[in-house]
Amino acid sequence: MKNIYAILTLFFTLTFVVSPALTRPFSGFREDQLPVPQIDPPVQPEGYAFTIWGLIYGWLVVSAVYGMIKRADSAEWNYARPPLIISLAVGTPWLAVANVSAIWATILIFVMAAAAIAALLRAPRKHRWFFRVPVGIYAGWLTAASFVSLGSTAAGYGIGPAAQGWAYIGIVGALIVAVAVLTRVKSPAYALTVIWALAGIIVANGAANWTVSALAAIGVVILLGLVARMRVSLAPS
Image 1: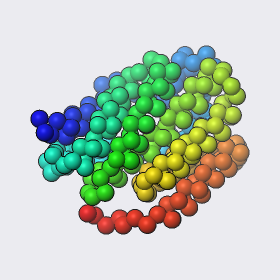
Image 2: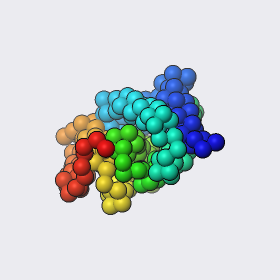
Image 3: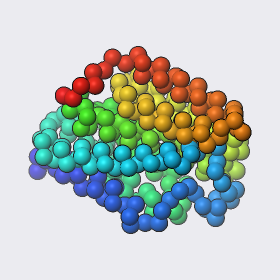
């Protein structure tokens, strides 16, 4: 079928969005999942930052439905859909996996992030609000979340530095990936979402852990600078 990619995108978007209702809520790895329990690790944003999932879920559904109805046979859309399908398919069972295994959850979220970034890099220039922006927000959050998962899991297994050191590594790692992505694609949505995550880290750590907050703030400044340099028309196509 010519529109198989559009169908699969809609299908896995819906399974991805519905999946939280079918599994136990996840708000971080439990104490019994890690040899060294990670309670509020410094690499993790403040809880309010995770409300962005409401925006991500809603906009991805709008994108998938619009794509199915209006752009099912679009060559540009179909070029970007395969990696997005992979990300959503892997993401559908992610919450269930995260409630069982921190290691596998970390591996899978990096797969999700890499595939989402690939979709963003392939995103059509037209219909920005219906593809590039929602996928950019999704990829931006996964960029940050993957390093949060890595930092929590690695510290939880006593690998390398303690939680503080992994907070530094996670922030720098997410920033390196974000800057690399933004040198390839002009996506304010992606950049602002990573900024949202970094701001959540600042709020979570505050002055009590000022070195982590300061590093996250430096990341915010760098990304804001890149956003300011972008020459992208935000008018609907």
